Image 1: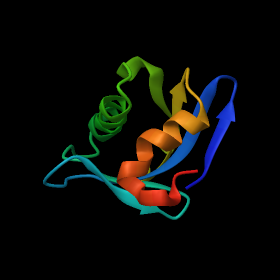
Image 2: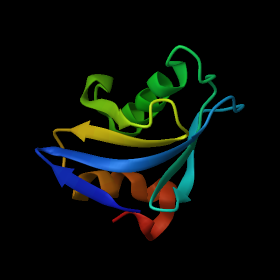
Image 3: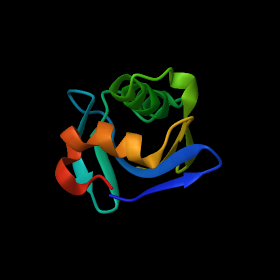
Image 4: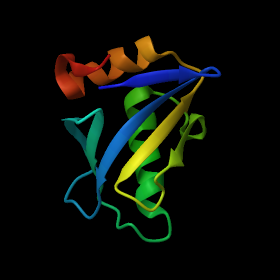
Amino acid sequence: MELSEKNGAVLFQVKAQPRSSKSRITGAYDRGVKVTLKAAPVDDAANEECCALFAKVFGFPVSRLCIVSGRSSRNKTLRVEGTSAEEVSRMLRPYVGGEAS
């Protein structure tokens, strides 16, 4: 998994699968993280749920997360404010195995 730091934030790739039975991180995918989301990709609901899911995992307010690209795609770039790549890697490791770096 690839994490990049830019201007006090961390960016990483997310592959989203909407309309699933449960919202959760399912593991590593290519250079990012794969998630399943209960929400449908309608009226930004899946994007909001994606940010909320990672906010819960990181223990951050959802206001510190945003999708910077891919709002209408399954492949997204998520931005997490006020943290380091090392911290995000540590928090994602239980979900993606040793691939968070």
